[in-house]
Image (tube, rainbow, N blue to C red; front, side, top):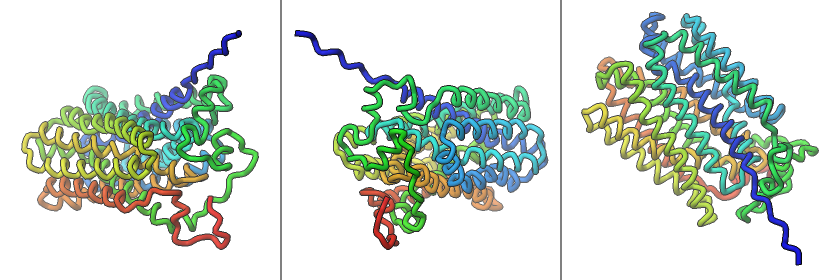
Length: 450
């Protein structure tokens, strides 16, 4: 009697894909956030006001927000393999050109950088939907969120040191190089779907296939999309349903408040530490690392927890909504309590604990766009991201107004905590069943839904 042939273990090519996406996320955040730690130095060198500095930090988010949907379209039209490297090349060139200085030039380069990074995360989310099974998608999006903050944290510490050692202009030139190298590697190695990649065996393809694990029966459209069968053109985006969906409003609302809160770390936080807590620019760079590192750990933990709850309960409500509401509530409580700590390190540690719990909610937000996006995951994700980045754009502009003539940073700190309460409320109101299109207030005449 012949022994049955051994079944090959699944290959792990999907994790190499994820590592590539995480590298792109980290590099994008290093270059976009560098100006925050260097803000006071750049402001002094160029003779700017704080209001002008606020515009420099917000200019990125104006174009970044507006270009979320066009960026997602570029990814769907030309594929992630071509779109992501092209975006990386453009933002790298804009980073280098920032070194030329001048308020108008720096403002323009921030706008160009926002345009080129606008499609990055919607496209990455679409790649995760194709390359990971349902019970692994929260971890994958959590890793993406984590490496955003790896880039932010490493960039904060490195920028504070580089500004002192080589000056802010050469720092921007140096930050432009890794993105060019990444673009060359990704274009050469990546393929759009697991079926197209020679390093993926049949066991991994089966593991990734829609409906694996029996959690959600796949639709014909989703099977075609994830398997790489693109013979049928994608259906038109039902914008009226998308924009009249209360579920979409809640998803966008939680991202608006959460992104605005996160912006405190990547815009004015180093200046807050320097002016309100009396720390040096180098020390402020290292202290700014702490809440960003907490986001790194929190994003990974949030993805793991959300996937674990989904595996155990099979419930989106528990795995996405429940995890997000609890973690954001804890974040708000911790952030507001930092008001009572006079010691800079103690206050930063409390705020960092809050940022950990805010990050736990992050993978829930990105994964809910996969859960409820139907055939249009990149578009749903881009609308959510666009709304979130409007919040990110407004916060740096609001800080000088909140400070007022008295330069009261406590008002900023309290506002920062209240933003996370707003995000928790949006999650509380969300109905996470079905798709965002099925919950639309306006239905098409045929009542056919994607």
